[in-house]
Length: 222
Image 1 (cartoon, rainbow, N blue to C red):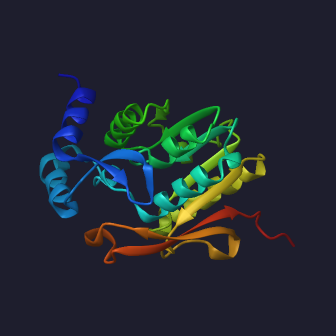
Image 2 (cartoon, helix red, strand yellow):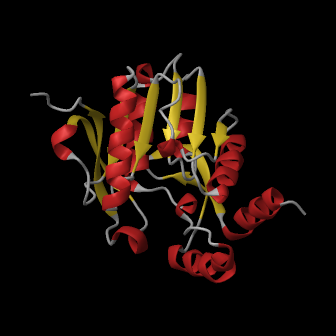
């Protein structure tokens, strides 16, 4: 059996299909018990160095961003869209449903790419995927970059912000969904919307997480 088939089988065996709480138009393969799957992936996959199963959950920032895209389709309609750190593919699927001309979901975790493919098929939309480390290259030729829940760790946040700045300098519209994680660059963001998002309590310590959508502003000059 191929590695891709193994990943797809693992996802099917350890998730169930659920409507996304704050974007019920979209259904995803999601874990019912966060810590059980987290431990299983650590036990089963640690030997080959794979990351935790971020792809198995509808994170607060991603839900907010998906809701905004679905409710404000003009931000993506007819445009080329990249969902950076796509995870489950939620935001990419929302963009496809909202009429984007082309959608790519990027993630360095091969399980996330498998989950995105499964979830895109489940929702009858087309999402291309890439496992390339996009932060190591100039931003691709797209019109919009969407990203959620990426500012949780200082080194990662710094790399992502520099790359998003490069994207914006090329004329790419950058939208961010985030519940106020520790390294969110608040002084660089224009607020677009705020939602009270139902989340998995075992992940966030809350049943509802207030989450916002922002547009990245250019860095100050002078």
